[in-house]
Image 1 (cartoon, rainbow, N blue to C red):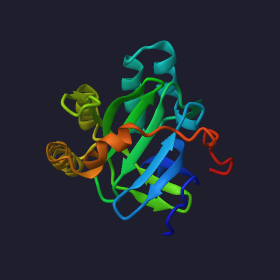
Image 2 (cartoon, rainbow, N blue to C red):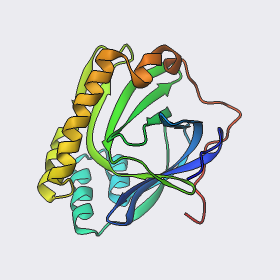
Image 3 (tube, helix red, strand yellow):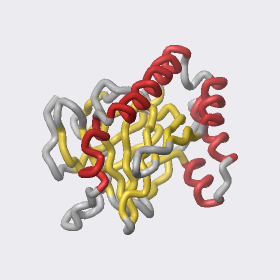
Length: 212
């Protein structure tokens, strides 16, 4: 599969049992053997489960549980959306069961955020993965770690969305990320440079292809 050019629009898709669970338009920052680095700014186009959109609009976290129930039964619909509030930088090693993200506001780096997810499967216009719900939030100075959405992870485990094999991979990935932090390896080896990163204002917010 070809390498992506810097500045090129690319597509992240979360796929479950051959169907799109969500998709997000991103712009390529770097594509190397170590990682595909992509980014977006407010206004980037997305599609996500309609129940997710409802949970956000209603500020009702319980609706997210309904979304996972729909995921387990294969009965979900997608709704268009746009990325809001923050600039996002996403660092995705090809074989890792995680991506490392950084969120920025006008004040600078807000926090690091680790998504535990399937390894990358490259496509012609981007990459496929699948978010496994549990996350790790890291303060900008890399000293404070907070595990997030453990309740949702337990729920998708009960539903069978996350298999025992995937669970073992997530457990190993958790330990790997904590070790990376301790060693200041991966993107954390260059944390100051990434912390200073900002979206190129010459780039418009990335848009989804009308053809998917």
